[in-house]
Length: 179
Image 1 (cartoon, rainbow, N blue to C red):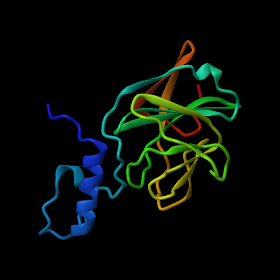
Image 2 (image 1 turned 90 degrees about the vertical axis):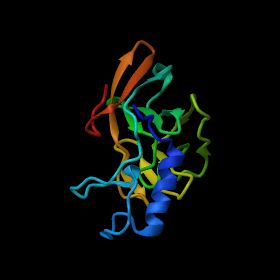
Image 3 (image 1 turned 180 degrees about the horizontal axis):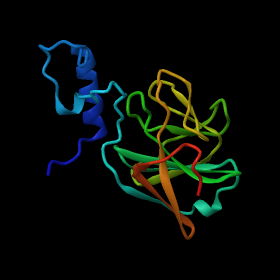
């Protein structure tokens, strides 16, 4: 079994593809397997591994707060809490695969730094910011507030396990799903 590519490899591949016109219909361009996109024209997404992520201590989140857990370059999730319950979003920007940062306010005037691998950051408020290119997302539903991203942050299945949450990045859910 071939190991999954790192986020850096994916970004490098995407940059190389952009430079030579990957996916532009130029049949003379040989595409790497990382550069292929779905035949139905839907956007490609950066998360390459389906895993279950344990996010410790979510029971301490108050309404309107969120915590970001960074597993590695390919996997980072956000667990938030609102008046309907707990929810999970991808913490990987849909524009260029960078790990987003939690915002302390809706305008993201003071973003929480992204944690190192296997770390957590938080609590944040209702938006997240991609530090790479400035895309901003609404946390409640993953919607893009400003680009360059055009695709919302995916929502994932979340199950409470005592004080923790288990987020299954292989099981997408409706953005309104709460646990």
